[in-house]
Image (cartoon, rainbow, N blue to C red; front, side, top):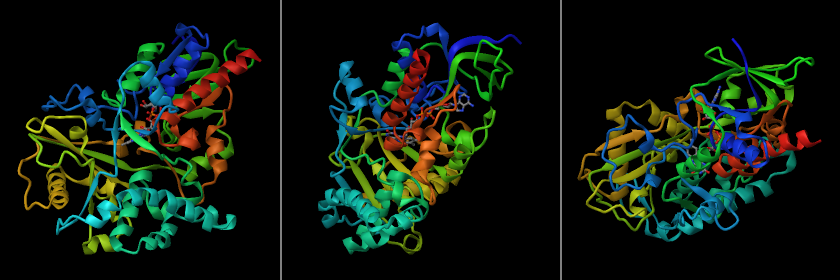
Length: 466
Ligand SMILES: Cc1cc2nc3c(=O)[nH]c(=O)nc-3n(C[C@H](O)[C@H](O)[C@H](O)COP(=O)(O)OP(=O)(O)OC[C@H]3O[C@@H](n4cnc5c(N)ncnc54)[C@H](O)[C@@H]3O)c2cc1C
């Protein structure tokens, strides 16, 4: 089969791949000399809106697209200096809607009684989480740092004295990092501190994908890359790329690999020559966190529109026995009300399950999931039964998805070092690396992934110029 020739081949049409492509074009590489190979039949990768699913047949009218994001949902750290906020503002796309986590209502599972004191202290808890991580990091000697798990936070949590406060701290920690506290390296936590304001564009995070796709060069969908190899020195190109359908392409300047960490961990792309030992070792020590979103659509709203979140603090025996119990669909976001959905029209609540809780939620049948949703929401609102049956319950499937690397985003397991992240971000020309897992400073975020793609483009340009 004849080979298609390009200057740059980008693997993956997620935000990193799209960011890389647009930066290359901006820097003067002709658009027809660049191609993006994407295994799915859509762009966006881990940014995906339920409304864009052609098979979806449920009433969504009046629900803002921002409420329907099944992958990334928030700009973390929104503000004038933020890359994503700037993109919105330059395009006059309107101010995003800020989620005020201080307007969270906490309830006990079972009793449904509202935790007034903790509600008042919710702001304190948010600050408390960052402070707790900072405290734990400072308290550890460098000798112990790489070994310390986030469960070191336990003594810190006890500073808050009450079991409810401790459970909240776990909820916050596991909800943020989506990984088991017992397996997270404290020394690297806080590198991705997403402090500041969380906000959602009116059109959802998919707005960024659509914006970049409009400026990006051609994208070949259903093109799953299976191998990459260096060209031989007598060839005029530097690298060859093979896809699962047998098609072959070659790149004159380089190949940018933006596939998720889990795709590389699972050896789904063969590299020839193989990746260096430091890169392979890093792939073992860095893992994909588990995060499942459950979007529940009701025919109308029956809950408080003024609250931005609802957290169920479990005080049952199962919760006391499980370190990670807080992650079993105990955190809910009032997603459509925040975006102004009318109370008598369909309204959505978004539940999140992380870490072990995500795997549990993934394993449930549809009936079991509906029961769990009902149990948690009754606890959140102090109800015996829900007044309406949901019109639909949608569940994300990132943890079973080979193309997202069987997970949501990256976290450092116990034993991981900063050097591992350096190795993941180190190019092996003509192979260049980008993607959220290569951007430790803002790992696991859309803006981190976007910056990683743009930076990879600039490294290629720099190489061409030297
Ligand atoms: C449930 C969830 C919630 C999140 N919430 C937030 C949030 O609120 N805010 C935030 O900032 N971030 C959030 N994130 C993280 C954010 O979505 C990611 O960090 C970011 O989208 C990653 O972009 P990427 O381009 O690195 O990877 P991806 O988006 O995964 O793109 C990689 C692309 O490569 C493709 N691909 C894989 N293998 C191959 C192959 N062999 N050949 C060709 N193509 C291939 C994939 O299909 C995919 O399109 C969340 C993620 C999840 C899953």
